[in-house]
Amino acid sequence: MVRLPPGVCPGQMQRVTTVSEKELKIGDIADLTGISEQDVRALIRTYDSLFTYRTIGRVKLFPEKAVRIVQELVELSGKGFTPEEVENEVRSGKKQAPPEEPAEEVARTGVALPVETVIEFRVMQETLARQERRIGQLAEDLERERLMRGEEAARFQKTLDRLEARLDRQQEQLAVVAEWVDYFDRRMDEATLPALERVRRSFGKGNSRS
Image (cartoon, rainbow, N blue to C red; front, side, top):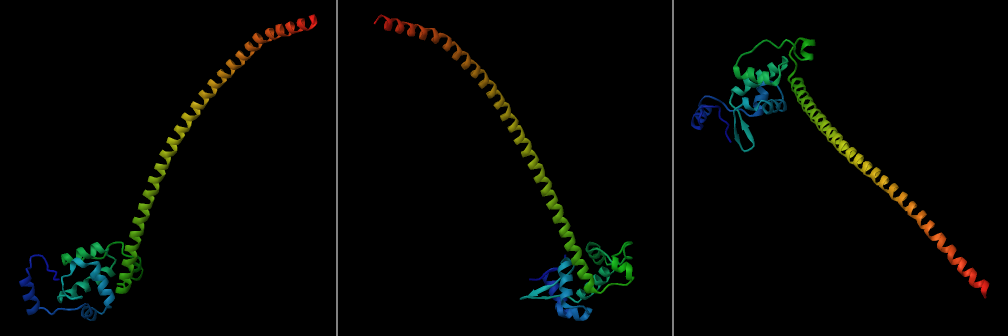
């Protein structure tokens, strides 16, 4: 697979590569820049859009200008620029003064940091940014869950209030029914007691005659 810069067709790229430029592997770039292959790979992975290369099997071959790009990336990163600022500076080909508020290590020492420290610091920044985004997402999820639980609690309370009101009405109706039952019991007692007395008297008279 061949990655070409904008406006360059495959034939042009092949002529330029074979005639005027020597292709370099990552190990060659590491030797020429004085940094480790691991750091070179990290820079290429972070700033992939700045590099052109072609691939033979699993090997990437870069033009000689990749050495200059790597050197600029190391220099700008060591001055406290953010990855976005570093990429913009390399694309524009201009080198500006370091930002007013450089990284703490640069501000304290006043010298460019080793590339290993720069890369590790950048990885820490990216990790911290990911963690901050994750925490923000978790906070949003928690707030959304809290609101949902609050709405559910409000609905539950309304349902409970309706049930309590219904229960109160049922109890009132039951009390009225109980009063009517007592009333009819008393009336039945009043109606049945004289009849019983008459029966007793009738039986009493019959016994006395015999």
